[in-house]
Length: 501
Image (cartoon, rainbow, N blue to C red; front, side, top):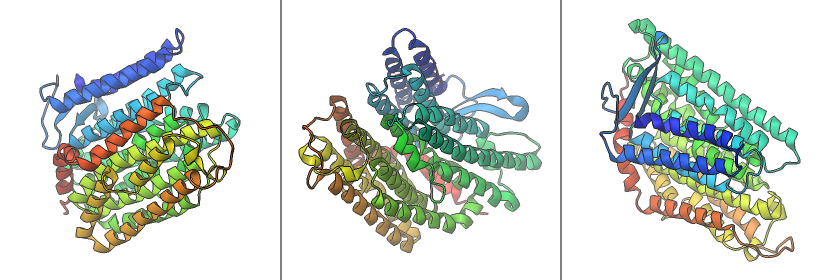
């Protein structure tokens, strides 16, 4: 049951981490790391070999492997998990960044270690579940289960220990935003299932069955809008972005790696997998509004990022700006832009996570996130300035990194469909260059504002940064490897989404 191990291993690893803390406080991190390693080996096994499944009832053209088990049969709910090329890529990203997050937290978390790793593993399990669930109730289950451990991660392990009440308020804010997103998602799923029941007298949450049966045009737009709102709140897209910057400012940087790297990417995955395929007519009609919201996020995020004095809030708003481009790629592009979106998701996740890790190292030595209190750090610290410059340049899309390939394919794909949209998007990317270079200038150049001894980057973070650099260069120089994995899935999604009635 290799497919089921993708959720069983992280879950059991979290449980064992929690209870093992009673015996020795260092055991939980080893269990968590081993769990992630075993899950990664499982994905590699799934990717390389085809004859691994134990129970497969039917093959579908767009799914390589699947496991279907009865769950709540009276309501047509099944434990239906499956993978295709798109899922495999997202799983690799989640597990890669999950291992990075655990390594980053190795010596940083010094209280309630067992409970911390339980929450980390539950977040990763939920994220994995979102990428492999092909029953809409199961998808909603994993979508919601992430909220509780994320709440504890922000409220219990923030960096600024002196402001506990504010952290709890921010955790509450995150919970309310995402709970609203979940309720909208649930209402939309139930409306979709009810529509199928009225037409076929069968109660089911099976994704494949719902995919085949077109939704009545009278309610398609309403259901599509519900899914869209649920996804863009989680993404987040302006004007539903209010929770992200506060959340990142107070979260531990190892937790931020999970959030920015993998958790936020469940939303563009959902838009491509669900909105584009289940509601092709309504999505086509809604595309101009979605593109407008993409522009709004892109330019607003870039503008606010430029004006930020807090380094973590700056990175958070830059992420919002990049999410705007991803939304435009989904609604304004074609198959080429979809392929670019895959590369962009991977590259943006890695480069942004790296910047969070380095900002955590700076905070560790300076005890501040305020950019105005920095300056001249290039001569005071080793490696961090060079690494920060590389990841900042990567984030704005220099050639040789995956961000360049992703943005090029996105803009090229959009240009074939909507040339003006592509041109305006290019201007938005230029804005990202301004705030990125401005950040580097203010933090690392100029006169030093404080007199402190020179220090080195922690050896563990040094090698993590090296690995992330190689990952970005790999995506920039050999993107075809990733494009080959996801090609069939993206090709199917694009063609299926074009079945306009």
